[in-house]
Length: 153
Figure 1 (tube, rainbow, N blue to C red):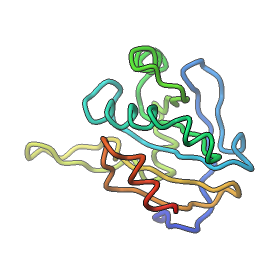
Figure 2 (tube, helix red, strand yellow):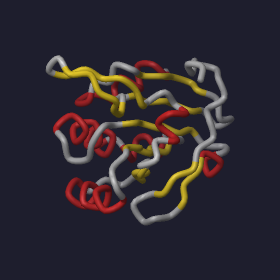
Figure 3 (cartoon, rainbow, N blue to C red):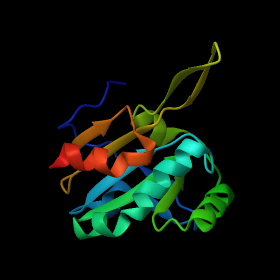
Figure 4 (cartoon, rainbow, N blue to C red):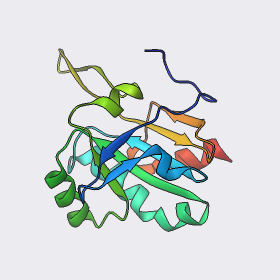
């Protein structure tokens, strides 16, 4: 699989959200989308990132953007995460790692000298025509909204 670049057509995807409803890229045709990949519900960095996007969600909607998070966590885990932190956007469960792999968000990670496969924290901003407008591979979890705004102005 080739590495995605700005200007590429975003890979099509479909997954199941916290309500066990199918969500697919085609649902956002004509809209802008912030598609973010994160390792694990209710962990410090993932919570900071989700809450930053939550706190700015109405601003994103006014600017014509929808927000969707993707991780390998279960629908049940997503429901707890959404309820605990009052997240207003969908979280997709990608246990099969199909969406993660299509976007290059599944790969080798290193921690404490150990190498393993896991979710790579990445964000893709997709325009209304389905093209990748911006890619973030070094996400600042506590200020991700500002990071995105600085790039898409």
